[in-house]
Image (tube, rainbow, N blue to C red; front, top):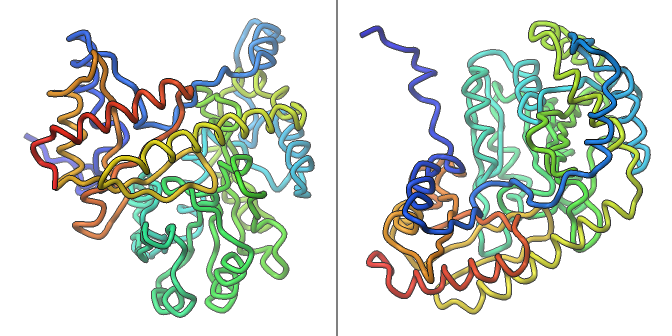
Length: 397
């Protein structure tokens, strides 16, 4: 048998999706599975999307410009104006989801064998995307005990090698829900300026902040050439399946590089971009309503989990994830057991084992990521199921 590449062998299975076959089997046995493993919002995609889709102007869905169709780019400019960011059309490259935005940034910031720095735990796909780009990822730890605050400035500075090309920041954070303060952003910016490296700022969850607004790196003084903003429509508009986002930078060399990569894959979805244009013009009431709904879910989940003996969690400040420590020996095995051997009143829960959000061996062994993307009564039911499961799980500590 022919061997596949080392890259192909080393890319890890997604902790978010790898238990899907067990969930399918559970449903086939008649068990209701509450999916809290993946950031798939259950809120309806705004009707404006479907209205625009029904009015697609031609009978042929043709290739579109590699940067994106002009109404899509103009819509993004308008959206950024609404959130206080001045972005010019030429600074935007439309992408196939936020994942392609991160991939483009990695490909254009670093040569194969060079390195990027990330805080751990991190969004698991950063590692897969870095590996695909031939880029090594270094990590600095954060802990649940202090709410996953970033490391000290001297630790970040010491972790940057001559081969480090960028720091990846996710703010608000997936998977922890941590929102960086201005002092923390300033500190990271100082290091990046001193070390002359890029900041890849993943701002997919910008709207989902529950104690104030998330801050951005976009307008940081003196950093025009160093900031790359990665964004996505998936969570903001409950439109994960349209696979659209953008990568934004003031760096003219990067703009040209992003466009050339865009040309190599021809274009993002023409039909999808057309249908998404009205989403950028939704009013502030839309965003406030969505954020308030997730705030209620966060509060319900936190209140419930904090009452379960042995469970440790930090109340998220943003996004719609909570990284939770459970009183079990191995959270990976526990998550599988929930789907294969347990149900409470005909239902069980699907969680994401958190070891896949760490690069350091042994980290996250007792943790899970919970996505609060189901309505509040279903979320409370999931907490009850988790409590009942922990009472009888044979691997409990």
